[in-house]
Length: 82
Image (cartoon, rainbow, N blue to C red; front, side):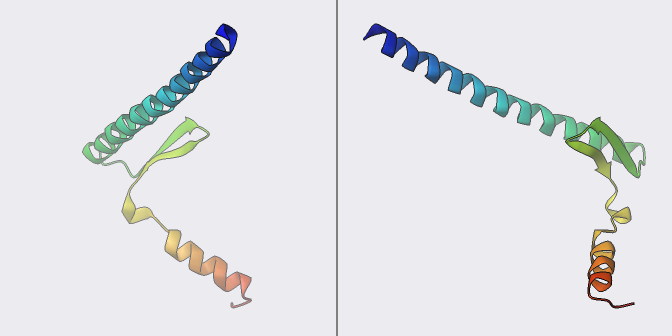
């Protein structure tokens, strides 16, 4: 029927719009991230904090990354090693 066809096409359009929005948002964030990194390097920033809850840290200099040391510390504490 015409209504089923209409509903089907509307669903297809909704899916297209959702996919398009997700892809465009990702492209925008990738571009912003590259600008943030360039700015950080040009201005010798060590870290830039974001205001979006999904991206708390926009840039961090690799020289101040303590992930490995912190992971080792946490694992030792968990295992009871002093």
